[in-house]
Length: 206
Image (cartoon, rainbow, N blue to C red; front, side, top):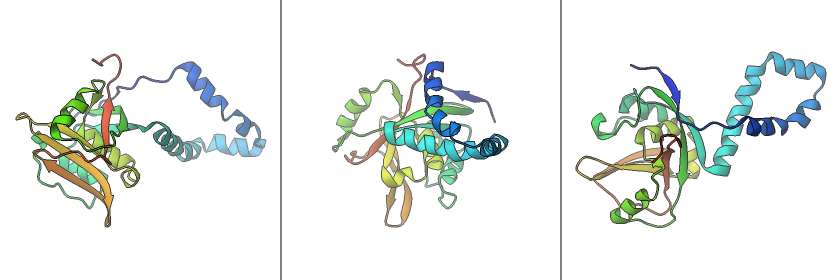
């Protein structure tokens, strides 16, 4: 099993990073020397507290999430990472495509069309987004890393098998809590669903 960790993300520039650091300059300069030293000593605690907040703000503002995907995991393992109490619900691993290998960081985006789509309209909508990859394994990884997202924004991804039939993975909330569903062989797309997809890096996009 590969453990290589790669990234397909176009990273922020030095100017952007400098500007973002400057946003916190006033706050840090208001700290006493003793408190600042404690934060220096326990920098990992500070990072663990701040990083999820930054991720949450980025998600709210841009509907974009940085997700770590282990493409070497089986479908069973991916489902259990989303919720240990869930069980694999019948799809063969070969039906759910692998869009990569090893461990990769990917940039996932959510978008919504706001109205119901037939399967023919779904074909046309997906063709509008050549910069996106509809990746079920990355979608499950998003569910594991941002578990409350599906409560606010029910999302899914969809793909075609070799026979041209659509399959979909949905993550949402119902009366019993968080839920995962797989539809096989095609279904119309409800307007309240958000699409989940991986943004292709510009160097690899087409």
